[in-house]
Amino acid sequence: MENLLRRDPSAPLDSARSFRSGLNTGSGLAAASFLLAISFGALTQAQGWGPIAPVICSLVVFSGSAQFAMVATLGAGGDALAAVIAAALVNIRYIPMGIAIAGDLRGGRLRRALEGQAVIDGSWAAAHLGGGRFDRPLLFGATVIQWPSWVVGTAIGVAVAPDPELLHTLGLDVLTPALFAVLLLDELKRGREGWLSAGIGAGVAGALIAVVPAGPALVAGAGAAALVALARSSRTDETDPTGRADQTDPTDRTGPTDRTDKADQPDQTDQPHQETAR
Image (cartoon, rainbow, N blue to C red; front, side, top):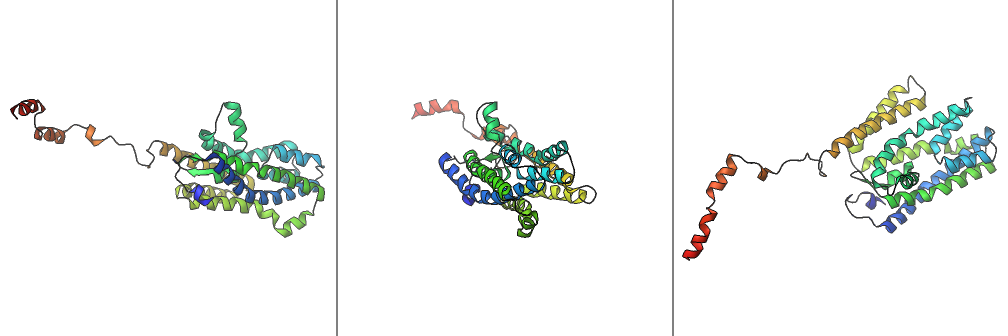
């Protein structure tokens, strides 16, 4: 996978090979998602969600961070509207992620909207080729194996309903931040482009977390990082693929040097006479 992620973004893609690579990459992510889903299902039973609602939620929402935000909000005494708003704020990161990958999706609006459902954190990061390009088949392969893992894990968590304290003891409650940390480190290893965005996002979140709850602080940090990344991307679009500003070919400019060079060249009109003399 590492070779695929680091290859030349302009190289042609082998769709079948990329999809298989996505399945390979997604299998590891699916294992982590499975454990997270078990903990989600167990927490919903502790809050009295019943057996059907958690599974439907995983089928439709398919976003661990948003679903845990809903559980946390409801567990703190919030109503359904507050839980939906919390989930939406956590998932606001998908706006810049969707903008970034939109150019690699295909078809009309409906098809592109359906393909966009494959954009989840791990798959998006794995499919990023650099240079503003994404491996579309790899994205699909990495996601298609994670979705059933998430749903089945939720169902098992609902059925078994392990004690939430056991989940804390096993460390399953830190899987989500650990997964995000791994994705961030992998992205930063590929180049220095993401360092500024990551640093600003961490700085904003770290400053705000002292005065506001963790959720809004993280959302603000993610928003700041996304804005910086979009601004840098816009500036990059104004340069050529090598990252340098477009420059006019010096040979197209006229000036004293050009006139001197032309004066040093023989008169082209004299060449027929010279050929005749020979």
